[in-house]
Image (tube, rainbow, N blue to C red; front, top):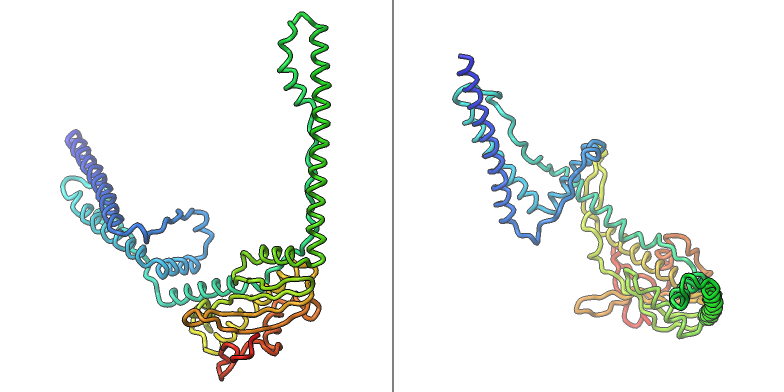
Length: 386
């Protein structure tokens, strides 16, 4: 009886292992079929979540992360849900049929694959609030940017050339002229190689020093022209400085102490549709802007771009003391809409204040044209812009 029971136990174990292998193969085939049905252009590669990071991440943060993924990538979330349902049903079907004959080595009930957590509307609003807050912070970061003032360019001094390196090269060329036992001749050749190496290194060092002197003189001439406000040098420096601005800047005139700039401003559609909101219970949520809030926020964004443009102009041109800045927005049909025409002085405003741009637009005669109860930002009336 013991031998028969042992044999039966071996058969059951064999069939159990075989069933587990079939389940694994079925899962892989189902996953490949679902992945193949999803267009590759909309899938995103996901980095595996490490155990330590998951252990220290609070549960509410993980729930918000899952909600953000579901909102931003609904197709991927649906794909994962389909995979879980397919593999879970196959696993349950295999496990319920196995072990019906003979002795069972594991309990009849098995743990099913957990389904994806349901995303509640609260989590969705929290994800929208977090996304709106981050987007707004990126937009307004331009008013906190600082620029290093232009300084005299210093050309680095070239390192001196070591004669020993040249001596080794010279010796490798002439050492075959004397046999190893001709010691006197080899000493003469060694000395000759050392002399030629010293002379050649001296000439190269003198040439490098002269080249450095010429380059430093050219840099000093450029720096002097920039300090004087030479038109060609000043305009080239401003164009190079404004090349990477989020709001493109065109230099129409730059000479001595004055420069005229045109800023191409973004439209109202760059702002997030909703704002971050904290409920009375302390939960992160989102809700729609009021028209007045949206217009105030847009005016602050225009002031931030004005402030960044002026700060960068002061830092780039040491000779500049007066700027005329024109703000233009692309309207319907690509028509230019003049939003402001302001003139500012270097010493007239506390430019270190991050809200100085909005202050200038409120106080300037041709600042922002805000009308109506909601304080909407509209183009300047015809004939006002210059």
